[in-house]
Image (cartoon, rainbow, N blue to C red; front, side):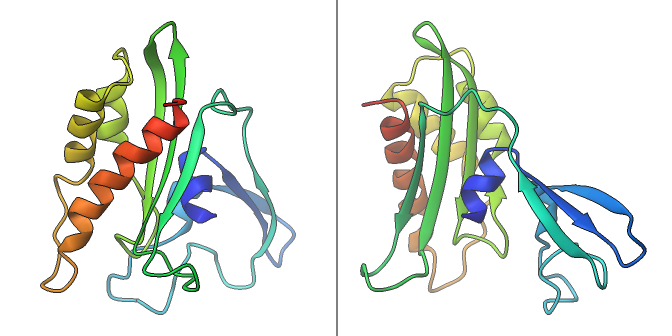
Length: 164
């Protein structure tokens, strides 16, 4: 669910022990491991999540969440993709792309999103966007297969989102 919430620009509303409320953009809610891998989120001590809010979305009829896993019985995804598009005629006017299972937190691929704007939803454009989304990937010895898996999942998720 976090990958989809990230793609759809969700915000997390929290309240601290002093009663003050704040909103955290979902892309900033989870943390990278860094020097404190035991801290998964940017919640402050004793903050309580009140709600997760989604803005009105232009993607309601053109979105897809795709989860790739070893077996249906496994809950954890090897790779997951949330893809959403809005159209202006035959061309993409807005795009959202978030990946899971490839980093410590949901990974928003904004440069790949930008590559799709103004272009038709065709295989060639989707493959270029998938290449861009994974261009900075630094796989380890035993998970390098995930790069190609993620690229294929991105293409498939956008095709499904676009109705193909």
